Length: 222
Image (cartoon, rainbow, N blue to C red; front, side):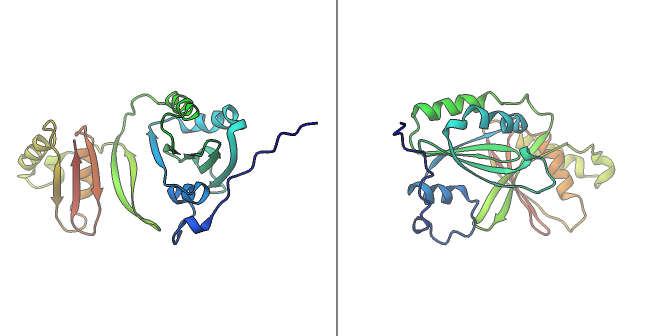
């Protein structure tokens, strides 16, 4: 006779969530399940397809529940998947990154998870990326977008005096340990967004992009 009690999902308590507008806002989901605000780690540049296959097999005995959202016609690894684990841990698999939400930073199981995810790091991508500020149901959020640097001939695409401006702009952006905010202004169709993608391919820093109708704002992080 086996007297071991079966594993159950933690209670999902909506009283812990104030106006939960978006079910897939994972910090709020964590609060609803465990009654506490989590800390979390984010891993980008991972082999999501391989992680999607290996994670459920490796940690099947630790998974208490699963939520997912994906387009029916898309492959499984391109879905947003949320795993509810033992030890008050939630793992979120997104199409371009993995997030771990937790309480105890030095917990043995968490450290095991971190080492597992580190093993899925891809080689250095041959693409530039930009951090785009987007609006979500729960407020503003950040989304990292990879792109190929455009093959742009500045002398043919812009005014004659633009090359001097570009050289000055690039020199400022490439200064070590220097950050700042830069505003590019012009009418629609004048090439602001294309030039920003070109710049991001040259500057090896984190860049946040705030799109608007006319101005384009870059926030350069060290």
